[in-house]
Image 1 (cartoon, rainbow, N blue to C red):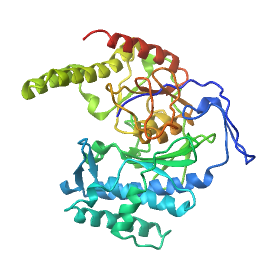
Image 2 (cartoon, one colour):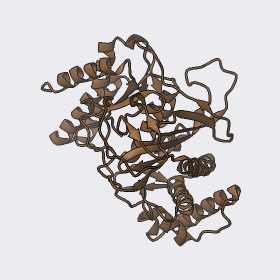
Image 3 (cartoon, one colour):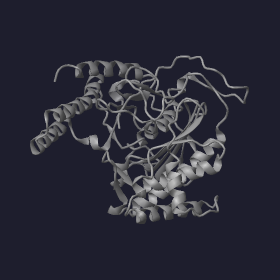
Image 4 (tube, one colour):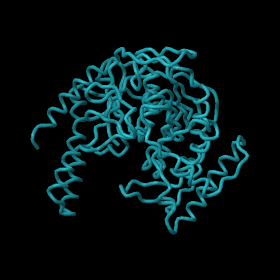
Length: 414
């Protein structure tokens, strides 16, 4: 993944739809959409999204408990795809199509190409059983899906999105590496209406209900569902309960006291990373082109370190994977999240849509490194300047300045 978000809150003029029940979303909560949004209520869609994400989360929990080596496929880009990835996408796709048969469009990460290859039938059968077991446990749908039904449901996620109409956006498992090692991952589902994010749901099966840095809490229960609707605030509830609490981003104003969210795998120091790069170069005798590529990645990592030094950050980092960071930031577990990808990386909308609205409706701000709002209306990819930054409104101006200065330093010759 990478990081490209900076969002300035300033009024914009939008074309209003025909008269409908109106809702006003305050400028302070709208990094993912126009700072003034007048729209219909999406309560029915939010209810369906919560249901679909919760069912998918239960499926993923079941798979994670009995994870087998044969569950892991290999994509061309070498990122792991699991049985749970496919099952989660099929399940969410099916539920949404049942709830909104007349208007269904899904932009999602997976397709069934690998599952239709010779030798994959056993895997397909297992996915089908998991999906049917999940549907049976909910008792809302009296149907048994065939393997072809499941494959078609997976392939329903081939929409390109865009600025016209409504499009659901799904990452069936965001944080696959975390999932495989028993760590943090999220089922991320959002709805776009004319290119704007209008609702989002993050199901985080392994996230504690209490703050991550609360070492003294007697409650060790895990499993959180974050959800937000434009203009309605952000909320959290246990995955197995309907009791909700409203969440709010951290109000910290002093950057020295602001905790950064970092990926689990970023726990190595810069020294450890540079040593690892040197070892890889020596052992593989990589070409000068790959060497340059690795150096570019290393320098991107250094931007975060430079920013922390400029801000004088003293608080320990919060290390978790995936869009779970968005959920945790929305409730104040930390104050800053930055994604600074290597050159050439293109952010996908499913990696940010749900998390973006959860954070902004909790009072946070999401921007790219140039101070622009994220634009989800261009299709599957976000056109960003350098990276994504997420924090509260007080810290954003300070952080933008530190990021720009660090990027300028990074641009100096190697």
